[in-house]
Structures are given as C-alpha cells and as structure tokens.
Amino acid sequence: MILEFFGGWNFLSVPWLAGMVLLFAFEFIEGNTVTCIYFLRLRRLTQTALEVDQFTPELEKVRAEKIPTFTHFLDLPILFLIITLGALKPNDWTMFIVGFVAAMALAAALTLFIPRLYPWAQNQ
Image 1 (cartoon, rainbow, N blue to C red):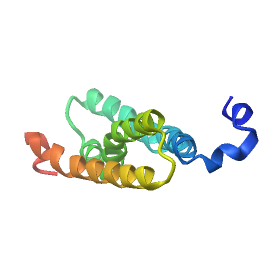
Image 2 (cartoon, helix red, strand yellow):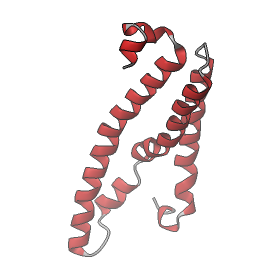
Image 3 (cartoon, rainbow, N blue to C red):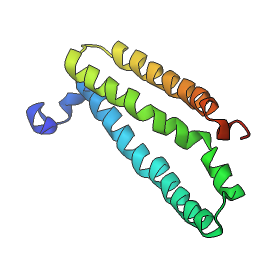
Image 4 (spheres, helix red, strand yellow):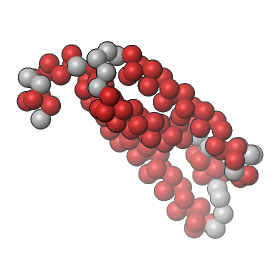
C-alpha cells in the first residue's frame, strides 16, 4: 500500500515514512532472530532444569545474557518512536536520529539497571 500510494520507492524520500518502515523492518528482523533464538534456547534449558528440579549453571548463564535483555527492552522505545514519527510526520531525519539514539540509550540503561532490582540477579 505504501509503494502504491507514494509512487513506488519514492516513499524513501519521505523521512517519517521511511523511518517508520526501517524501524518496523529492524524490529521484525530482531524479533525473529535474536529474541526467537534466545527464547527457544531458554525454553529448552528450562525444561532441562525442571527435569532435574533445580536451576542448572547453563540456564543461569543464558538468563544473564545482555544482548537478549537489551533487545527486549528496545521493543517499546522503538514502537514509541514508530508511533511518534507517524503522528508528527517530521520533514527531516532529525527526529528519527534523536529518537533512535534515545531508544538505544533507554534500552541500555534498562538493561543495566533492571537486573539489579532482583536479588537472584545480584550474583550474576
């Protein structure tokens, strides 16, 4: 629909729309690679831990990984940026760049701060 309404690939010259499409594609790829692979591995290790009725060292190591946590915390800021671009429709790339940097910074801060709230994460 975007290709038809904006005359083919001309939508790439519209910063807010190109930014929305780029962020959606980024989230789709990230969600179907990093997140999916992580949760499949986590499910397998959790089933193993349930069989032995205790947390295994491998499960604790996987739970402490930072990249899946970061991508998890990145989802909402990126969604907020997509919605903001669609609502405000800026004519340049400034909001996209500032919003993307802010989303990455927020996700990084949450990745570093949130695990400290949980006692079980203190030892990892």
